[in-house]
Figure 1 (tube, rainbow, N blue to C red):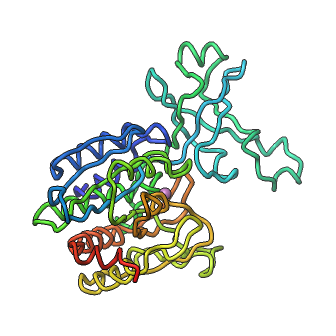
Figure 2 (figure 1 turned 180 degrees about the vertical axis):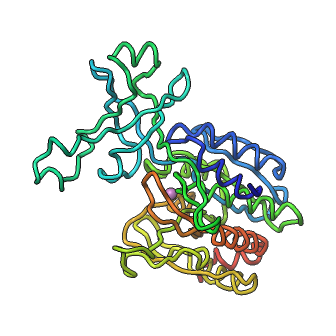
Length: 362
Ligand code: CO
């Protein structure tokens, strides 16, 4: 498997539900360290890798962020029969939770399980068309009873649970299928950009940040921003592809294979338009296709960066993704490569006069 594919596969496969991002952090640390002057963590667990120009008066501070966490579950309690009832972490659809494979991350190691579905043979015709509500669901780890689950399998309340859905190439390697592209594709782009920027001197101090707990309310980006104190924020996310049956162009405008997307509206943030225009200019120069997305829902870490201090000009750049917030997402390798090229070129342009111009409101 080629190197970049292997990196994206490793990032997608790494277990890291919100609040339990350890394996992703370890992977990112290993990948960013060779390009960074300093790698630290904040008090919530976000990873901050500093590269580029040494910090100093008049040197812009650019924060690139991608969240390390993914949607998951957390064990609420073990029933006397040995089944696990759970709390969801992040914005799940009820119908995406059922009939899937999961891994419970216990202190004794990973324990596989399944969110069983009631068999059709005992259902009324009405029940067959019904969505199963999350409160009715449970995980079956094969335990004989509660003691078997807690003693032999070492399951404890509070243990995180992650989707089991290994990386796979689609369409001969043009598309990648996997869990957690939201936002491991952004984490991959963070590494790609750090590699691309390592070659030459930069006009800014760049902080490549893997944030924690985005899916439960942009919590990590808030604390990491306090540590980094950015002048400009660039968030790298999984975008919302609208190119499959059942979704309209007014709901989402991105298409797989048509390049990275700049978000122009989501329910958490409005981007800085000077940054949008700079993105368009840089994309043209770098010959990177660019698209836009106007969403009514969605939230992303850019919103936390943007509100940092007295306000930070911020933009969200996304790699189009199908089927977000489920076990199986699909991205395009071309879009990923183009996103890396665009963001690296954008960062190279962020010298002091450009940053001053973006931050000026005359
Ligand atoms: Co996300």
